[in-house]
Image: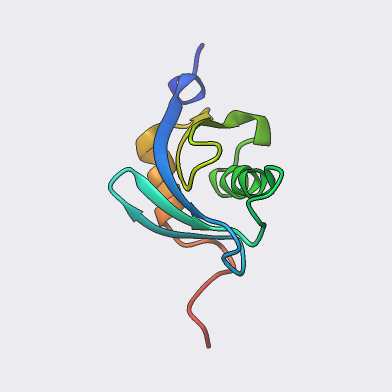
Length: 103
């Protein structure tokens, strides 16, 4: 039997801010996700940090995450195999285990 979730591919926009202090998912506005990464936009380091962060938050392998448009721009389009767009945006907008409001 085929699991429809495994056949799904999410596609959404990312507004990436390199040198953002730390790697963090910000606001999800419609199908646009704001992301900050600590890495500089040199030699693809910021893009790699984005892929690692999205893979970790979406619980997929790094190879499942691809930047399909905007590799040299702050505005990107990302595809993620194995998860639907709605599910990906819900996971990215939700709280992360271990992260909460400051005490």
